[in-house]
Image 1 (cartoon, one colour):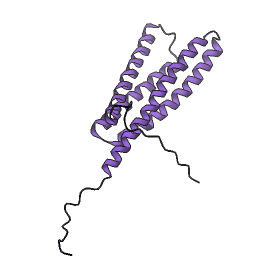
Image 2: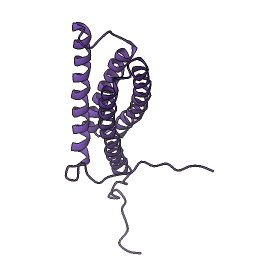
Image 3: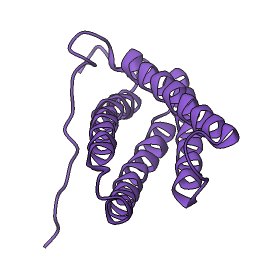
Image 4: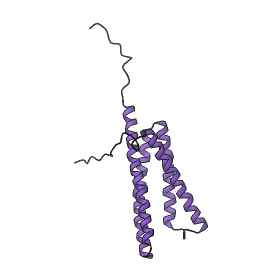
Length: 169
């Protein structure tokens, strides 16, 4: 028995914008936010303000850099109207969200084991993750809606102007 799982669709982005503008906005916003996160993480590592460099910081920079590349792919797909490029972003973002949840679970567990008084740090970590991942999931819904609208737009049949119908039957 096959399981039918479909992503919900919306008619517009944020209740007022078109799906294309919303998709372009999502690409730009997450590109900028992840670039700032990469720069901030590298700055903290270079000035040794955020503690030692560990595997979690390296993975965070790697995942954020991959998401920046995916946002560039999404921006190109939205501007050129290519649903396949939008799907690449959707798949990559789904993997990103899953990886960040796993990374946060492991990181907060290790932080809690090593420093039990760091509960507020773990709370901020989970709050930030919930906001970012929630926005990314909404972004996947908007981009899916945009890609589906492009797919249906491409699937429409051309007008039959080349068919000559005889007037007399």
